[in-house]
Length: 101
Image (cartoon, rainbow, N blue to C red; front, side, top):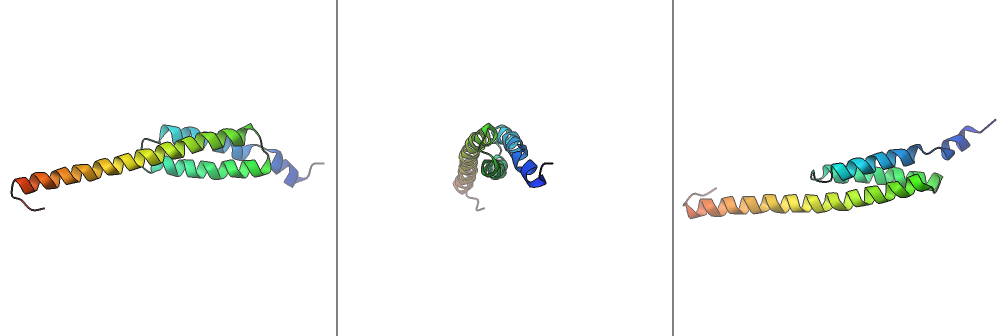
């Protein structure tokens, strides 16, 4: 009879979760911060799968979540720079009209 610990380590559950979260992180990477958080959780699952079994699920999870994390960080930085620029333009427009915000 198989030991329960061995059966747990031979499964690909963490790898499958990692790949699913990686795909979701790619879809949601254009939403500031949200895609990055999904990718971080997916990377944790990829690391867990890699420790149990170094297979294609863990590799795919690393790549998908890594790309999602980088894209999410870039998207977040661009979004917050855009928000800051809009705020600066509103402030300049109000100063030009003589109003103080």
